[in-house]
Image 1: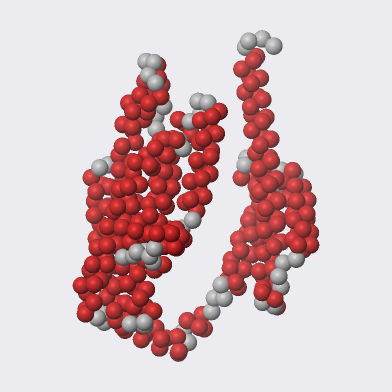
Image 2: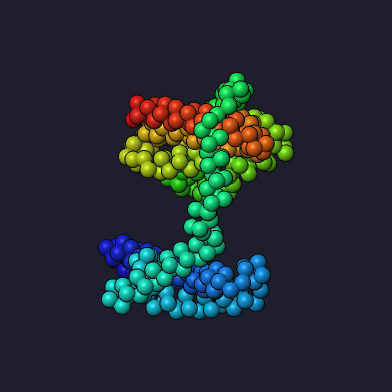
Length: 354
């Protein structure tokens, strides 16, 4: 093979490998689609119309049979290159039959999902407009919009505590988030197998941490360090680091490669490349993400207070448990005002740094 033919052979092999990967992904996705369709249609729709789902538990033999059927049907459908997944991954042949098949199956998936969701959530228009329901709503809303101001001082202190919980969690999160963002940026960690392995491990770990809601972290840390603002702050801190690390790393992955190549050509080491070529490009996005996260944390700090995270949420839970709706009304109004003010301030700051 000549030197001129070698690049074309490499490109051809790469395209063939990508095509095989795409087809494999299409087959796996079609297996999932078929499995999902059978499960939802059989359990959530058919049985729910006859018996309560709790009276019809899954049997392992049933799941196994459905899974085997899904593998066979999904593999046959995807390998024919006329499936919805094959079109999504760009391996489908263009034909009217393919278009019709994918449209019908797409509508089928959407319809059974919507119908099963309607049934499982027990949507009832009758219950919303029932006389008893309307009377109860009138009593609650009537109390909420006639707030009791005798707890104003306590509520004011609690809302200030909430703001500081969010502020401290956001500020403390910045240094570890910066470090993790560089370590989880694909374009900076592809130089060696060790760096790439570290990139994947950290990505998986941060995805796991981020998938656990701050409410759950607040419960964990309330048991760990005790109920109060400290537990709430740590819960927000953990989730903020994981969430912002993803945003920061994606900003790093989207930078221009030109400055990196120019600095690297001068013989600069890795740290110098990051400091002089990467950091100047991501300062403004980092500031914007951090300010926006503080805004989010103020809202979250209200919610985690419901499980012992301190702040106004704890106070709200106490009065709600006692059915003191006038006091709850004052707390809700104060939360709404503070969230609106914080949203306005953060939006103005983000606009000014663009």
